[in-house]
Image (cartoon, rainbow, N blue to C red):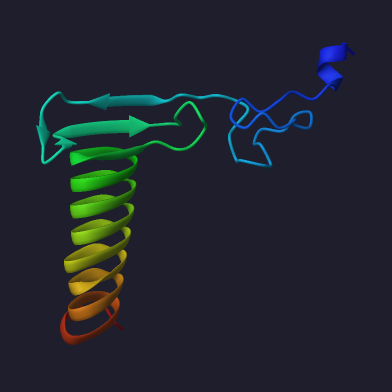
Length: 149
């Protein structure tokens, strides 16, 4: 075994020593294995935010990238139209989605939500909670439809 394999390296972010084979710094949380991912922003902006922002992967410090814009696409996306694993915006589509109109596995919408678990004024899903609801297990004031035996 070479001397460099057994010695601990220093974190590129905070400079503290890293134990051998650690993927994440125990002090600051930065990743030792650098994966920069992908990021693109349109040149046009509206109210200081890019019209389109696409972001995946990690930034150089190892933290996950977040897409923010009028149209935001990424692992985490926040904007007017947000598409991602975690999405928040006026119209949001994702695994976990929250906003005015939401579509996702877990969807919370101020006006409408559609998903496996949905909550909103109008909610449609396997489990739906809200004012007007539809689905298998529904909890609401007005039931649009319910699939029961």
